[in-house]
Length: 384
Image (cartoon, rainbow, N blue to C red; front, side):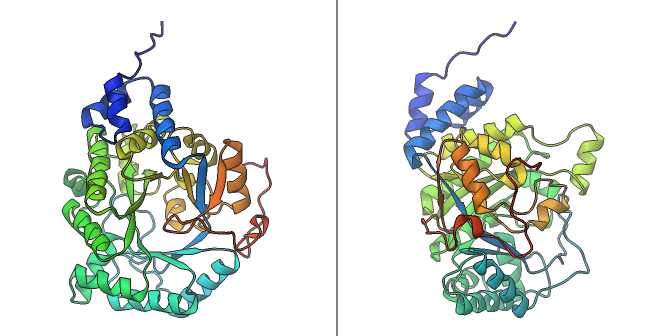
């Protein structure tokens, strides 16, 4: 016989509303009725951002697939691959802008041929040719590696990136901010301390960042929560984080995932995904306003339901996502603005387009016409 678990204690709700959720509160909430958790997160979302749900028209630009890293979750890297030249990067940026994009997300890796001078040239070239495009680029990992190749400090590199026109540093390469976990899944990557220090240094240099968490592999529940609390502590100190993006681990075509699946474990369940979005909203309430539901990881329908569990953003159109698809992601590489609007309105919310820094923007093209050349318009009701 199913016994309904008791309602959330009043003192836990009060601390959540004040932005003072504790680790013990978070564990208690996750042990309780998930729908009460979702309801509390949804109420905090409404009090913070109202009924608006945002998305950004953007494009990923993968400057290389070469990487000497040893991350056990990556199915994208190769030792012998390509490195885009400035001309091709500008061509892809122009295509994105013509399709209505307001942002390009420039992604690289641990690549010996790509030093800080090359990154600076990329950003300066994009900003010179397309001054109204937001450049969201580099991870703390890439900043550390490229700065070292160029013989400069991380602080100097960040100041130069800011001067070159970088609008926002990506909060990727965080994975789980636990050195125990990092030694297993990404032993060659920046440490937890290096990631935190780089993000703080970016904020001091006047560069905004988002933040991410990649979960559902070898971490414990407590380590997931500690990660979100770490984000809160950074934000309390610097105020430079625009959003948190929970990203579920994709276990296909990579060593960590193959080992997990051989033992009978896959990744997080849909319920866990929604619970993490909800508890992140509660932990970060009054600190980080925006929680993203990543359609690339969750799929469109679960991402839409996540809007009832504390999320208020659906991310970007992307126009391509080679990294997720390489790891077995099956939800496509592009969602048009028209489909985002349909998803958001279907959840009873109000859609708006934003830029990288969560500033509302007017669509550059009519919503139904914002398409990258070569993509067919989605047919509503067709299979995903």
